[in-house]
Image 1 (tube, one colour):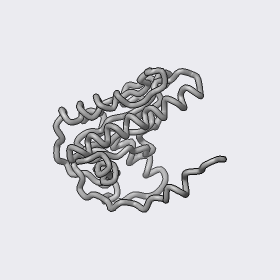
Image 2 (cartoon, rainbow, N blue to C red):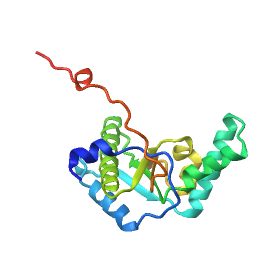
Image 3 (cartoon, rainbow, N blue to C red):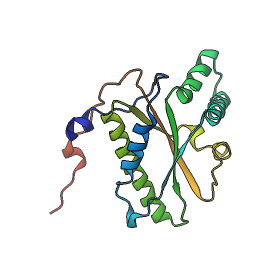
Length: 184
């Protein structure tokens, strides 16, 4: 697929089947993401593959967090759990903390670029993804579940990877003129 078509066709997918995705494709996507632009080539991001036991705990945490906000039915509980358990892969993503606000701002931008590259590589291989920043993905208990030191790494969400149950239609985009300003 040519690059323009790849960009125009990629979608954030919200519902995944339970079908597996070869580890080789995940490795290729994450490996190519290392070519993302990043300030001073510090490669400030981290990827954490979340295993089945940890995913189950994150699904429980997600249900608990939602239940604290509103009553949830058994159907809703299943949907919340499926959101975390169905994608073939769940990859926690974060940035290494430096204690410098400007640097961490740049590092978040680098992570974003890396995730975009990985998502495009996945899409080119017929694999869907979603960068989720749902409450469970950055909760303090998630650090414990994933054995992540919150003093060293700030979790910025989770990359859900799998086979799309359905591909949503393209959302309307603004015109270039509405976002591109030119000075004299």
